[in-house]
Each structure stands twice: as structure tokens, then as C-alpha cells.
Length: 230
Ligand code: ADP
Ligand code: ZN
Image (cartoon, rainbow, N blue to C red):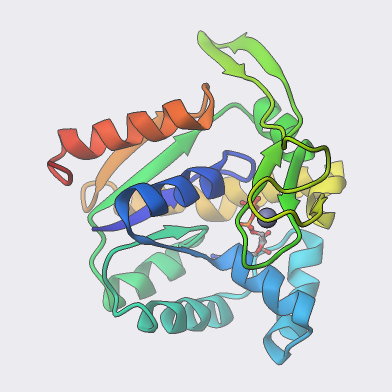
């Protein structure tokens, strides 16, 4: 099964995709993780993308598409979930020529929730680990959507439960202006991807208004409803 998980920054895409990866036995490919890793290792690719990354802007399509193409080649183009790709219509068009997508999981949330969640995010410093936590405790209703999002805390403060490495806050999550810029980039450049796929690929629209376990259960139920899971 080939899936895309799509949604604004702070919508928890990475968390759900990691859980779906183990539950469905499919491979998660996250372009944001690949870029962070390359930047950390200061590779040629890392040097090329760091300025875009640090400004909260998208990495140019020609670079991102090649990165994705290489990542897909490594897994024989089957049974994956793309997390953070495609983020532009150009990327979606390129993807169409490489593989067939079975469904898009489209995560929805109000902007004030996304900002709170992004500011409170803490991730594992071990690049081989996908440990991901959140300090925010959100309980509010906006436009009739009731959000109940308790914090996702590690057992020991600042330490990853999965691997014992230290947790840290991404530099692009620390800066409120940068968070807002990424939300604008999402609205302007990424949202059109939804219209590109409408009518072509099956959509699963999900509000992220409950803890990850429940969101993942809803996603699995929807995958059953559209016949992708028994
Ligand atoms: P978030 O969803 O919280 O913004 P990501 O880890 O998915 O975080 O992305 C972080 C950054 O990596 C983006 O702000 C952008 O600079 C870069 N990036 C990731 N995926 C893409 C993509 N598909 N196209 C262009 N830039 C990307
Ligand atoms: Zn870890």
C-alpha cells in the first residue's frame, strides 16, 4: 500500500506516520528528516538546503524531487508512507511519474492548535530514532471541533523512552515567526496539492483533535472503509 500523509506543520504527521509504519509494516519516508540528517552531517546536500530550511522556506523542487526519487529507489517503490512530500504541485506531478499512490491521509487542524503544538514539540536527537514528544496540554473547542490533546511526555524529562538519547527542540520550532512563516508556506504552496489530487486519489480527511492512538485508529478504520485494509 502506497500512502501520502499530508497536513500543515504541527499536525502530527510524523507521529502518525511512524505508528502506521510499524502497524502496517510499510516504510516511512520523511523528507524533513532526510534534510535534518544531511544538515547535521554537513554533507553537500545539507549545505545546499540549510538556508531554505533555516528560513522556514521550501527546499527547491529539483533538489527535493531527486532526494525522494533516491529514497524510493531504495525500497523498490512499494509499501511506503510519504511524510512531508509532496509539498508543491510540481512535486506531486513528478511523483505521479514515479509511483502510484493509493490514498492520501489529509490531517486538518486550526492554526492556533498547530502553533501551540509546534512550539511544544520535542524530538529525539538520535537520527536513527523517531522518538517524538509534546509538552502542550490542549483542551478547547474551536468552530465546534473539540480538541482534547494531553501532553505526550517521556518517562524521564528530556530523555527519549525508546533509545535513551537526549530530546531537543528543533531550531525552526523555537521561533514563533518561523512557525508562522511555515504555516503561510503551507497555505500558499502546499494546499494546492489537495486540489491537484481531488478526484484522482482517495482522500481520508481527519481532524487531529484527539491523542495519536485515536487518530491512528481512525486512519486504520478509514483505510478499511475504502478497501485498502481487510
Ligand atoms: P514540518 O511539517 O513541521 O514543517 P518537516 O520536518 O516536514 O516539518 O519539514 C521541515 C523543513 O524541511 C521544511 O520547512 C522545509 O524547509 C524542508 N522540507 C521538508 N519536506 C520538503 C518538501 N517536500 N519540499 C520542500 N521542502 C521540504
Ligand atoms: Zn530516541
